[in-house]
Length: 487
Ligand SMILES: Nc1ncnc2c1ncn2[C@@H]1O[C@H](COP(=O)(O)OP(=O)(O)OP(=O)(O)O)[C@@H](O)[C@H]1O
Ligand SMILES: [Mg+2]
Image (cartoon, rainbow, N blue to C red; front, side):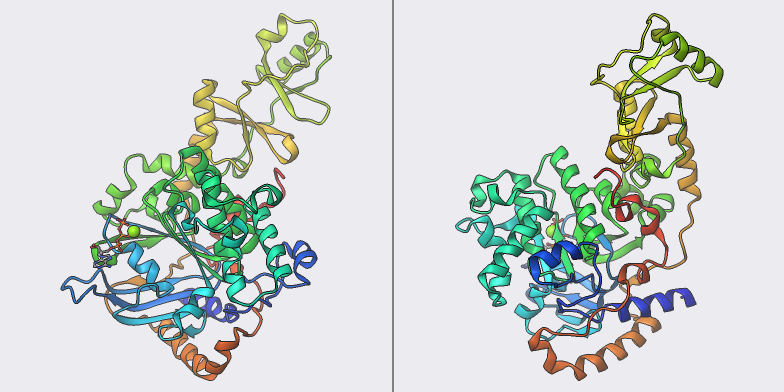
């Protein structure tokens, strides 16, 4: 393993010492929190180390999880994929010890949590299952406030936290807080499930096929919301999915498992798509790996064509003259706030005297945050081979073409992220870097054993996300960083 890896492994562990605390440092939404929570800041993600863990059910011969070692960097999204029965859920539930490992150790941040009180551990780890897993006899507010109530928060603080979380998951608090789960749609239940998991501000979120039970459009929206929430909160999220496209869209890292939770490949979506480890992974990716890469890049990342702009009321002849000079064959008509409203060819314009002002509802329009996949879809549906791109507040940004998308595919193939990859194996060997970090960690854990019951630790120093992002990959992905584009 390279020097680079070692430094990053150490720093991500070091940066996440604040496991279990709610008094962490800076957060993007501090001002909002200040208003709601008397100045408490948010808890960022903690690293997780699954160390040589085996699970045998009922003394079975074949382990459900076989000597798994998996390093999960702080503040990132890790997707688990693999065939049914390969041990994904078992692995996930061992992280919060809903299932106890038969052998091995679990390290959360710098703390060995293999033997600590399971209920206490679970307060530091949010858990989301399909359809939200809400308690049917309790209101939305009571469901979300469950863990804070157990932690002894006062009523006012819980009520404020509930409203804050409903806002975070895009549900209107006044409308939904007193409803029962049966009075919500599947997607809304799922949102409440996410809000509930985040209630006590845990550093880690576990999700088991969270979006499996909703229709494709709702799923896409929930995925986008998760990306937005993550860009604000920087939790460590471990998410099981059956959908490889979902893994590519959401994951900073993807672990592809085979039976016994054997790691076949653990890498970035880019590298898995570009270099699947073997036929098993190839089959898992399914057809069209090249097309799937389009789910990685955003419209805002590629070079757009500037095009020609026109305005309602302008002389059509003048605009045609302008088009001729620039070598294009169409013009995008924008309103007085630079928002595209129509897209007219030279031919159409030559039949007009003035440029009209009406809004074309069929205008093929994509946002800078859309994936290239979304953009291609829009172009194909509109059968234009091109789409107009809007940026912040709907402002015109340019034109994207099928050619641009093709060029981007070539670029993606050439993409070489840093040489860092987190450790993942089933060999029983624990890499030196991890061993060293652990010996430091177990020393810490002994030293602070008494503090655990108070749920108070040292504040997190620095930015866990950047330190745990050695590839710089997250920085290159718009939705993780670009906070204000369309909002
Ligand atoms: N409580 C249990 N007792 C005995 N065997 C179990 C138990 N839970 C799971 N298993 C077995 O352990 C293996 C792994 O199960 P697990 O639920 O982790 O798979 P999975 O990867 O989540 O599958 P799926 O994609 O179908 O959800 C399977 O062979 C399963 O039958
Ligand atoms: Mg499962």
